[in-house]
Each structure stands twice: as structure tokens, then as C-alpha cells.
Image 1: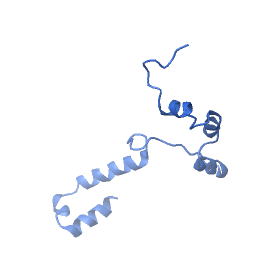
Image 2: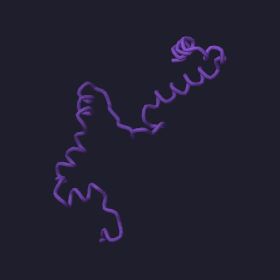
Image 3: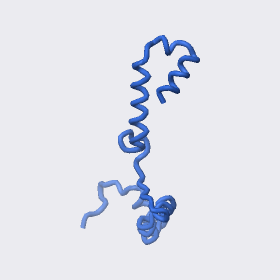
Amino acid sequence: MEGWLGKSKGLLQLCRERGLIDPAKHNEYRKTGSKLQVLGEAVGVSVDFTPKFHAELAGEGIEYSWGFSKGLYRRQPLERKKKRAQFRKLVDECA
């Protein structure tokens, strides 16, 4: 049997050893999911969580639409970007 000698245990294992987490309840939570997932299942929707601040996984549609809008803005002539009113109008057009 392999032990913990020379290895990092991790926060979850430390909490189990100190009695802060009941392993039975922890596993039960994993089976049921979060309140949002349970609510989503009740209305027939699947809820998946993605890592925060990961541009390729978290909010894919938002990242691609933001990139598309930036591309539209960059193609506009410099004259349309100089004055504040023109700038705001242009940003609204690109969004």
C-alpha cells in the first residue's frame, strides 16, 4: 500500500483527517449536484460548470462574440474613433 510520505495530501484529505468533512456526506453531495443543477433537472435543462477565467471553456459564446466585435471596431476608419460621441456610437454599432 502506498502512503503519503513525500507527497502532498491536498486540502480535501486534510479536512477528512481532521473531521471537518464527513466522507459519506461529501460523496452524497457529489451525487446530487448543486442547487442550480437540481433546479435545472427539474425544468429539463442540463447545467454544466466550467472553470472560471478560462477563455476557451468559460462562456465560449461570449469570448467569440467579443472577439468579433473587436474585429469590427478595428476595421473602422480612425476618423470615426476620434470624438467621444462618434466613439460611443461606433461601439454601439459594433456590439
